[in-house]
Amino acid sequence: MKYGIGRYLMMAVCGMLSVGCSAGEVSETNLEKLSSIPIIYSPKYKISVFGMEKFHPFDIGKYDKIYHALKKDGYVTDQSVIEPAEVTREHMLLIHSKDYLESLKKTKHVARYLEAPQLRVIPDRLLDAKIVSRFRKATGGTIEAARRALKAKSKMAINLGGGFHHAKPHCGEGFCIIADVPIAIRVLQKERLIQRALIIDTDIHQGNGTIVSLKNDPSTYTFSMHEKDIYPVPKEQGDEDVELAAGVTDAVYLTLLKSKLDQLLIKSKPDIVFHVAGCDALDGDPLASGKMTAEGIEKRDAMIVSVCKKYGVPYVMTLSGGYSKGAWEAQYKSIRALIKGEM
Ligand SMILES: [Zn+2]
Image (cartoon, rainbow, N blue to C red; front, side, top):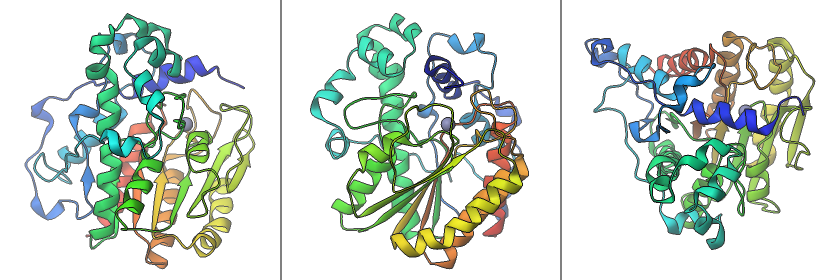
């Protein structure tokens, strides 16, 4: 494993921390530019742990920065963005065990799942407000995005968070404590809104939690393209895994992805596609060694959306990981391109 999980988790913790944005940055709204793709977001996604973020050397405000850039450029407003409800306990129990949910009430357990011992400073009584509720909110965002994608004219929706693909039914890891995508799939299935789902995971780390959460489930199909020799080690056996050598370039990545997409949709016959769209394959990511560019990330996402449209399957984007300096901007540009494509 090239990077320790503790370091990975520290990046991820800080990736969800707020850096804020002044009201002065918001430009006048041009309503014609407003996204017709439902955008789901809440300021309550943010985790703020006693200013710990100030000491972090990497980009710490990806999700916020993307939201505020979309707002500044007129693609969303505070009114147009959809604030989700927190996922309910009943819905979490569709994937997680009661014992596991009980353990999320204790800092000692959550700090262990997050492998971030510095979080032990948080008293149990503040744990829910400071951390766990933020994951419930973002998980609610993935469920809401899925509902919207099924109804939207564009057949797409974007949650500016989520993609907690390392969370498992009985434990958390990789700074993921609630398995948002598997829960969303179970909720939609329970409500008979879908039968089958395909997960396309392009975060550079394998979505081991998603795979374990949906093990032996013929109604779901997990596809992951990830770097071979980094966390998680060992890997889980998904329905289809593509292992990448270190240093993957746009050309190699996009050629491989293109060779897979049609078959994935044909084989899995999904009623919905969840894209775990981490951008840590970007050159300069502190937790992987990919060499992709922002243009490559944009092409990747466009390629996945395009194949979903080709087969008429609703598409849900979750943002997941990616914490290099250029990570937020790469994902912002990709989302902007998708919005413009629907105008
Ligand atoms: Zn990742």
